[in-house]
Image (cartoon, rainbow, N blue to C red; front, side, top):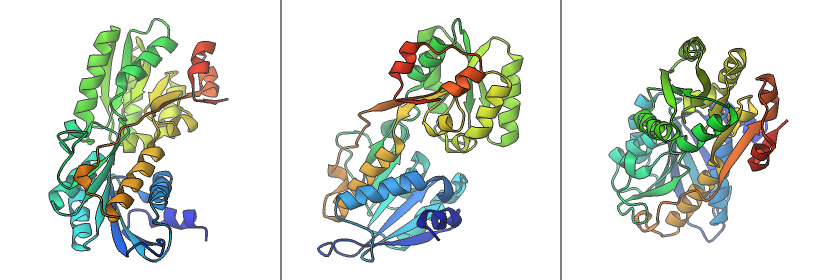
Length: 326
């Protein structure tokens, strides 16, 4: 069985994967805790491994990783974090803010490296990006802080748009922050917003029905959320059915049929987080490492979806896209 197929079978179960380090590296164990599920996190796991390799911790038998997946059940995270602490791991990698907060509450001694799509200061993870101090640092790809740009892209593509629908998962601890940021961005663009909560497939369907009933809605902004990204294909299909353009935070939903996305590269953020974990294993202190921020944002555009929606995408917008799916 190929390794990727094996990973996909892990699901939400806890697993320890062996890694080999170069001969000069001491044996160590790393914890990895995430709010999502293993089978849809293969890209970020591979990037994390690559970041470790860059610091000399390659696949083998002197480095082990304890994986814990919450499968979108945020209530499981405190227990999973305590499990990693009880295993006496040397460093904990926490994906998503809620996983990082669970790790922080579980230990003040074990170094923590987070990889989040939000503002770590607003989340309460650090008080200063350049000088995080304490036992925590990490990387951010600011997935939920780019609402202004996404709204601007929808507004530009759909001429005369005045109202945009926003799909939000209320279970996401950062939902409130994203709603606030979206409202501020909408004011600057003179746009109205209609918010719809969706924490199940049936609620996603009901939300699009609600959006369609509001005939003035020109498009849908999909909030940065693991559950909504998981159901990107269903969202894209509903958007086509109701002829509503969509804008996501990451490129993966665009590949699944969404219209467009604007955001940082998530795998790259996990690669840099893996690099930080390797540096800490080699003696660096978490609090001395500044929180790394994205340096490049990517715009993905699905022209096939645009055609199905009857949209004419200006050539200027196509030229701006980092990835065009035809």
